[in-house]
Length: 338
Ligand SMILES: Nc1ncnc2c1ncn2[C@@H]1O[C@H](COP(=O)(O)OP(=O)(O)O)[C@@H](O)[C@H]1O
Ligand SMILES: N[C@@H](CCOP(=O)(O)O)C(=O)O
Image (cartoon, rainbow, N blue to C red):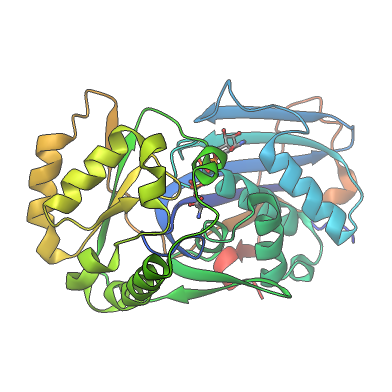
C-alpha cells in the first residue's frame, strides 16, 4: 500500500470501561484527550517526544506503545516502513483505569490509517481488532474509536461493537487518586470462576444499565451494581474501594473506572446533590485526589492530515517543518470509519 501523507495529527479520548456490571464489554468515552503528531521521515530514526502524562516513564523508541500500534497497522496494510518523528501531548493519566493504554494503541492505529493512500483499506472492524490484539479486551478500544457509550463483544470473526444512547442529563465525574494500578495486576486478582447467582445478578444489572443510560438515569444506582470484578479487586484498590463504598452507601451511582483505581460516578439529575455532598466530605483534592468532570466525548478518535507529500519524506534532521493543512485533506473520524 502506498502512503498518502507524511504528517498527521490524531486525538483520542480517555475511556472508562466496565461501568460496573459490563466487565470487558461496556465502555464510555470521556472528553479528556491525548494528542499525537506523527511525521514520517526518510531515515530509519524513531524519535519520540512526550509531554504531560507518562513523560520520563514511557520508552521513547520502537517500544513506545503508539509506535508499536502504528508499525503493526502499517505492516498489516503492506506499507514500507520509514523513520518516525512523533510528539505526544498526553493528558490521560496512566495506570488509573482511564484507558491510557487503549488511547495510545488507538492513536497509533488511526495515525497509520490516516497516513495511508487508502485509509478505508483498514476498515472499522480491523481498527477494533488491531486495538483488541494489543489490549486483550475490546471495552476501552470501542469507545475510544467511536465515542459515546459502547457495548463490545467478541465473535469467532473478531471483536464487534455498537454505540448506545446516552441521556444528555447524565454527568460523568472521575475521582482520580495519585496512585497507579496496572490493569494486568487488577486482572490477576480475578477468580477463575464465579457463582451462577453472581453471574445472573450482574447480567441483569448490565442489561438494566443500557436502559438507564439511554432513558432512565434514575435507575443508574441499581444499574451500576457489579459482583463479577469489583469485590475481588477491593484488596488491590486500596482507598478507592473505601470511597466507592462510601458513595454507594449514600445512594450515589459509583463504580470502579476500568480496572481502577479511579472511581467513576454516573449521575442523573436526581443524584447530583448527594454526589456533591459526599464528595465535598470525602474527596480531599489537596491529599492526592483529583476530581474531574470531563463530559462525555461523542466523536471518538480523530485523525487529520497535516501534509500529504509522502513522495518527498524529509531527512528528519531539521525538526518539524513545513506544517500546513492541505486543503481538502480528509478528516478521518474514528466513529465513522467504514
Ligand atoms: N500515551 C502512552 N504512550 C505510551 N505508553 C502508554 C501511554 N499510555 C499508556 N501507556 C502504557 O500503558 C501503561 C498503562 O496501561 P494500563 O496498566 O492498562 O492502565 P490504563 O490503561 O488504565 O491507564 C503505562 O504504564 C504505559 O506503559
Ligand atoms: N475490562 C478491563 C478494563 C480495563 O480498563 P483500564 O482503563 O483499567 O485499562 C478490566 O476491568 O480489566
